[in-house]
Image: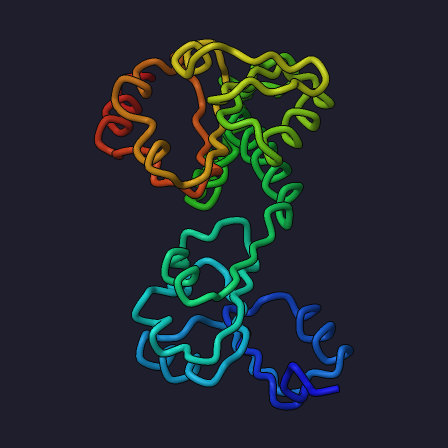
Length: 257
């Protein structure tokens, strides 16, 4: 029987941006020995040089695999994105060259959901301001404008894997959960889907964004949306998309005290 693959010792893996060490362990356990592991991303010129003889490359979100980069990747078989998104990869260029692109859509679902809840608790209690004051030598003992998360209304924009996980965790802390999505979704627990984004913004104490970066989601939070947020409301961006112009947000922040 003729061989259909190179000897494992000749198959080269280029792993960048400090992807998890378990990737190296799994490859070595499978018999692969030609593994280059780097903790950071590479400048474009160096990336072109390194990728020229690589069969597989593992990246996170910082490395940009453009068509020009793929032109130098004559041996490349597949790209592994050790993150949720693939917007750092020119998918059309990869497809034209027969290069498979994989991502890890559930790799940090729980982590992001927990982080959003932690941020919400910190902001509701005014911890960032109190911490800054403490570092300046102050000590704010007052509980004015500090609130429990229990009973607050959480508005989730994008009810995907992270949004649904956040929904369940938030209910466990006593929050009322509402969500907006462009398609009808089956709610988990007692969560309620609302009909439009502005309705969600106006009713929620905390709004959190969990949408992918697409043409439809870029700059989705404009001046009208910012003005729709209830007075004293909190907006947390946990999405990859460039979601807003900062100008109207700064204006709204100054006038919502």
